[in-house]
Length: 77
Image (cartoon, rainbow, N blue to C red; front, side):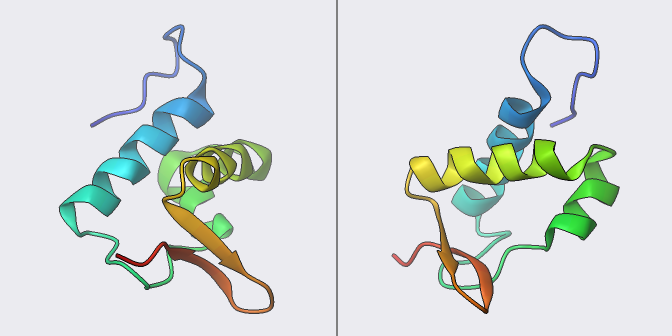
């Protein structure tokens, strides 16, 4: 799945969709850390606020949790 920089859907929603698909297919396994903000910024070519919005959307959906002092993880099965 590619990110459409010129399309009408906000970038953070597109990135959240890609990440949710990776969670669903096991690329990001349950109870394991997701890539850091810096790595995701480089991969998708976007700014940190965009990545934070995408991760926030995943948290709202219950797919990702934040563990203070440790990072962000895929929610357990």
